[in-house]
Image (cartoon, rainbow, N blue to C red; front, top):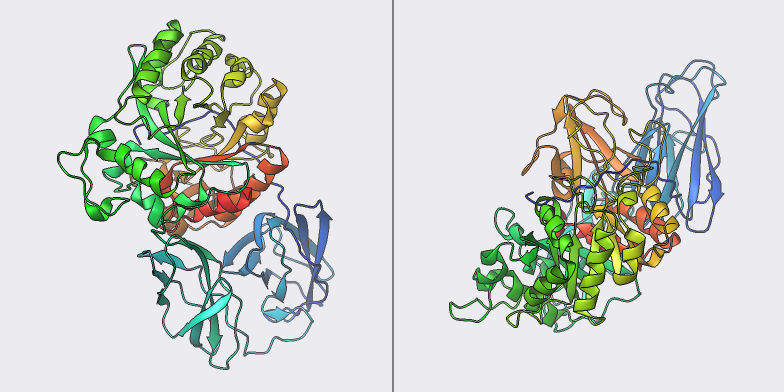
Length: 610
């Protein structure tokens, strides 16, 4: 990325307990070992927004057990968000916990406990320990099928959508699948795909799939995929007061082939409140166009266009600006801000800070240009970092930031939004302490706190660490580099919680040459990425390196010698719960094109803040 956001901040352990778990107690027979064993589940704590669950495995036999595996099912909507003392993975709604290298052996009479946090309202069922049942008897061979993979949606039109999912498994074989729309069966198919037709334009739907085996046993439902059909005119404003903001990059229309229309076909447009268009340049102390061809000149074909009508050579406005105009016509609740600066173009702010009034006037003239004034509802300032070092170092002084925001508010008035992306460095004497963010807060609508990129392969030898930690944890490379530390510091300085948005990265950070599964391992350099070393989109990592664990509220995985950390729908759900409990104003993310084609990360943010 030419303008990738980067913050300097930290890594942590998420404590987002699994909501709604009902304790399962009872023995489980270890069929894979001649020794008997039991598994006991308890709900350790409940604080309203979630629960902490614990499993205890005990060797009740006469010979040692060399390893253990506990499996259970959750209903749709319930998931593990973090775990300790076990490697917890999932396939659909089926969860598997395997012992760590240090706690697999159990002598007769010995026991071990592992725990997890999560989200949802369901209870665990169908527990197995090393293949045996939790009632202490051998599980019958003809078990119900597993849950299919969560469906993916493609080819979304006004009236139809194509669904596809990964196959379920069963000891006797799969007979067919039931496709459920909003909980009601709409079709039974023998393949792993289905096209649903006769839908209503501009409408939200939810799809799940259940498998049936040759004995006519029906397994648990898959995870749900949200679909918003195109067309249908306007969409009602998003309910609730929380901000749900995404960055759209001007350069994404090139190699990534991600257009404004993708916000519609993915269903994301119906689930957001704001868009930051990135980036405008800051040069010679003024706001300036970033990429004129992408911004207002490129002609989009009919199939690329939000309206379905091709641009013509003589129309007054083309490019992304016109596509954003068409998007707002379909979704009038969406507000669009023009974001200026970013990692690469922040060097121009030092000159701008020398004459804030002139800078504000230049920005106003550009944003309110009659050719596209109706497209934008305000301005976003992405200064990385005032009176501190980013790509270059700024020495404009602690007051410069407040003065700049004051000048922008004076020029843009109260009818426009003024926001800013800020550091998330919560360390003592760190970047939050370098500028007067508290004084500037009175002039902004909110701060987009960049609570990601705390750690990454710019530290080529590691230690490996999740790049978007929520709270601190034992072994964190830098104290204060966490979301919780950043938000606490902003609030302690007097910035209202309602003016702070939590940031989510739609990508992962990774190292190669790693031998250790858990965080804290050494590395030899950045892992290979599609566009940049050490970074990869979530939509790629989801299948190329599926998450195997969660630490500090962020998922991680080791695939071969590569180690990645990134957010998933489950970890995002946990972070949104935390943000609401903290009274934050909402969430934002960088950036749309890293999401899946059906916008599952945007859905997680929207659902989590609703």
